[in-house]
Amino acid sequence: MFRVRVFKFTLAGFLLSITLFSFFFMPLIELLKKISLFKNLDEEILEKISQIAVLMEIPKGRLIFTKNSKATGFYILKEGKLKLFTIEPLSGKEQIIKIVEPGTLFGEAASLSGEYFPVNVEALENSKIVYIDRQKLLELAKKYPEICLSIANVLARRLYHLVNLVEILTIANATPRVAKYILASLKGESVENFQTTLVAYQLGLTPEAVSRALANLKALGVIEKERRRIRVLNIEKLKKLAGDI
Image (cartoon, rainbow, N blue to C red; front, side, top):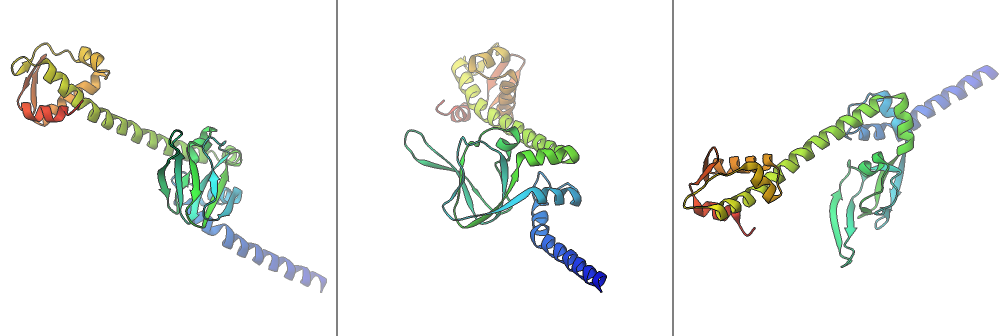
């Protein structure tokens, strides 16, 4: 009889454990699957990550972290809405950087690099967030290297995107500056002895940026280039592109 009671208690405890796991961890695992850092990891690893995660309820108006505070971990917004913002030192004016919606990861860059948070974060409404401690995640990553590979893959893709963005911005910035240089150097309808490297040095650009700006001007039908000679085909359009630089 004693053994039967022990068995019944153990079975009840087992079933209770299953229920508690399903209630607390399964929804979190589903949330982790939507996060870029973790979405390609196996279920077993996601379960381990969910066990070190802490669910926090944040009332409206509460600061989650402040600018220049040490980043000991990062966060996922489960429910609610947050704002990332800074305060302009001289005017004291608030500058909103981003509105965070559910399913969004935030604070990961500062946390993974062991640096300080660059912004403040405040709850715009009653919210639930998931906190993952950096040190605990690193300890877990020692047992499961796939975590490091997944993070490295995501960060590499972000870096690739940023490099492309910088290139786009550089071209956008270079084109009017090169256009103005051509206008200033015009003799009649052309510029003779256009040296890309020298022009880049004078304009504070890279030779590649100048070359791409010239290619852009050619594609727009503004100029044509033959070796070191540039001939302007549309002076009014060139002036417009040069703007007020």
